[in-house]
Image (cartoon, rainbow, N blue to C red; front, top):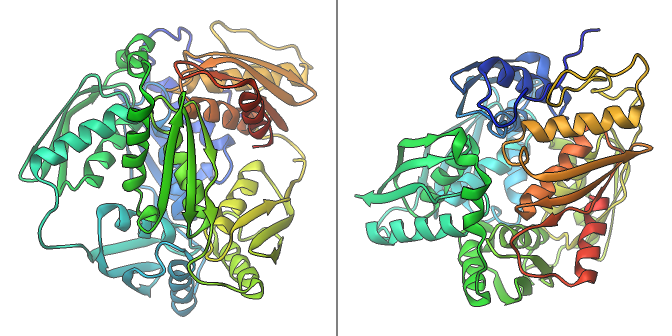
Length: 501
């Protein structure tokens, strides 16, 4: 059987050529879980990637696009990938779609109506913001059998627009300055008639997409990003690190509150935000587990946040008996495109969902936990799913990875050495990790990561890439630069959490 090699660029400091970008994306699609990569074709012209073919669910199509966006050298991604799902009757799919919206704590009271015909979901009704509309689509993307959406009659609240042009510009600029996922040092923002115009340069295609999303969530009716360019040189660490200069605790707390305010799941939550030496403490009561998880993730995306203590308590707005929660979680798992085939046993005690059984990958383990956390009435998830040992790693054929120059492995390579090389090759192709100071050591299939990265998100991506390369366990000891000091016990706790994740 033919297997491709994930080959690192011959000179990481230089612009990468189209053929290498195409080869890297094809290899990543082939080795990341949740994709039928042989059905997706990749082509690249001057850094612009085009994806064609088809997948078996909407989540997989989105995942393929996100993988391409995160590859170094990619300036943009267009996709005509079609979705060909298994045949599910309209009545059954209508039930599953309505059930997904009803079971999600945020969308259960939205004024949204769905009709289904041939796998296409037509949405109508009213939502309060662009972010709420995106949330509805994300929930329905997770329903097995959905092929496409028609949203012409799903209306964002009409009437008076709350933000003026000046207010939109200010909010976009503030969110851009505080979001660790984008670098707006070279970006100009202006608004006219509620149309946001973005101009300048960012380092990655993913940053450009994130900028457009930020503009929409502040109230823009349209975003014009034709003059916002992606340039390889803008990935320079000197440019990026200017963003991470020390920040005052009061300013960090205000930025966290602003970020939480734009999350549609947080609309009914009262969250207390306190910051001391860059360590954020979230306290108060929220109505569901997904809000608690989102609040922590949103806080970690803010510049200057060194660590997050999540003390939020989950207190559902209405009491849901355990005997009702269990079947609802089981139904949500069954309709999920990724874990619907897995034999997951669900038990619920006091609102805590216990998941047991076996899945094929770490990706499916995390997906099952996320699905359970999104069900009304669930206050915590105890994920005891076990990942079955694969019979053959999808990347075992990549026995020789190339880092710098052609270094071919011997006929019978050391498995740990081969795994370490695969992990390093993934870092070399990552737009965010390629120039970070990460050391990789592998013993008995267990990867240990040491060194430094710029952000918490880089730290998380480094661990995920190691898992995807085939590590059975990851000890993540990476330190995040340009953040306030963290007490040793907090750092140890974070490292222990990452090792489990």
